Length: 314
Image (cartoon, rainbow, N blue to C red; front, side, top):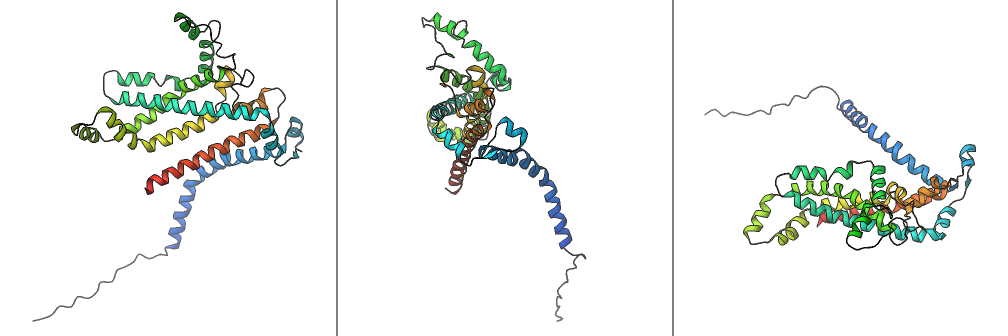
């Protein structure tokens, strides 16, 4: 009997060094990343650097022209923290931001759950709810100013039909912050509706069917299925809402200009007013206030990343 020996087959490799090919791949990756890097440097890194530079110098209109601002270090930050406007603006910012994002999320979630049910005209009604999001902000703010006008506004006219007296929505320190908050909520609901509705679309319908077969009611299905599975989308929605609301200027400025008596002055309004709203620009304190807003948004972003990592590891 003849035994057969199997000889190892030599693998033939393609000629040519691997180093040039790897180098070409790296340069290709750099070429694709270059536009993004340039965009981040030009529109994010440089403005942030300039804002920090403004806040540590005494920039006046004359200093802008001559280019010789005096270095002041943290003096601008000490000045704004010692200013009486800071506490009022910080409190108004907290109330305006928290009330806005809470109401926007609650109303947006309720509408998203409502439209998640398939019925006639659902798409049409959902599109109509996007109108506030599509309108220019100056149009929305002007419309709300007219609606909340003390003398001839439609809101007071409707309230008077129910026997409620005139309310000075925009000219009273007791109601001006509430007025701009209502307008901002109306503007932010469509964004929450769109994001949360998209999140609901990703929840498998089989889960609701199985829960229904097990005897779970509508509230139990919402609490046990919808809310837990919608949590990642909810977190990013709340984070984006927080960042957007912190920097709202146009709505408040058009409706109340931060008044009366600074009742609706937020940190963003205070920064804008210092830089452009008084006719005597004071750019350095305005930049310092803006940097505080950036710091608050940065802390919120870090908190979101930490919560997201905890969910992934948990």
